[in-house]
Length: 260
DNA sequence: AGTATTTGACCAAA
DNA sequence: TTTGGTCAAATACT
Image 1 (cartoon, rainbow, N blue to C red):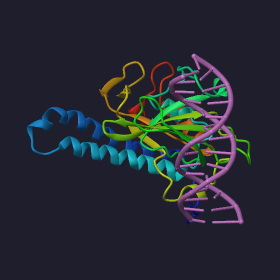
Image 2 (image 1 turned 90 degrees about the vertical axis):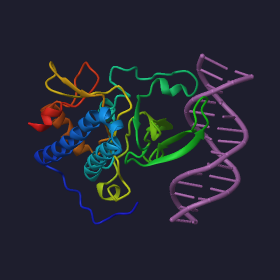
Image 3 (image 1 turned 45 degrees about the vertical axis):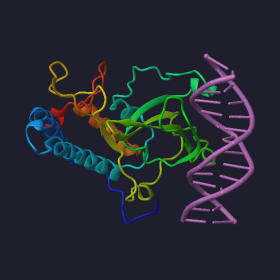
Image 4 (image 1 turned 135 degrees about the vertical axis):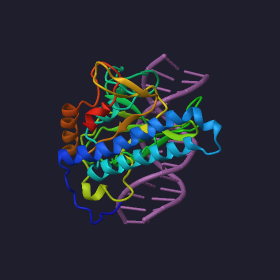
């Protein structure tokens, strides 16, 4: 990855809000279109669903690019994990303490499902293992800065099939303690997809207030990997200001908060 | 030459 | 003994 002409430019909260508003509104419309077309799709020769799916994917990718252009590496994946239905703060920190390394019992562990294993951090692969009852082997990565900065972060990547889409179940073990990569170095064109969306899980896209949220459809959850510290703080502020997810329920976006 | 990946061996837990 | 996770030598890549 080489440096480009990019210069790090922090978005104002208002700019960020407007970009997300536009993208999320478009994406919400596409999701609604998918639902509406589901019954009619078989009656026509046109694959409307595929079209809607493509639109939805485009918005997801655009949102990813917006975030990746502003971020490089994630100091703490807790928020992105919360936005993904594969994990919640209420889940046990370590699901399987069975076989393997003892230190996992003490390490902070969380699992996310994403369309790419890429998350903007520098990882060094140190192993690969065939896993029982899994089609694909699991890959093992440690932080590149394990030795030079004593960073304990580790991730395990298991490729999975999800409606014939290539998806990855990524387990993060321990947070990074190393310095985040520089934005200039990390925002070149091959750094991408730091937010991804999945419609394979139990998440529901809702709108309305916490009390009277109405279900739009069995659609998508945002799984975001927010990285750089200032963006992280900005996003947390944003979360508090606009209410990204609830405390006691599975996480979800309050879409109308973005749209007001 | 330095760095990253691959892969079989080894270890620990069940 | 089986299995998942890690180590480290060999190999590949830049």
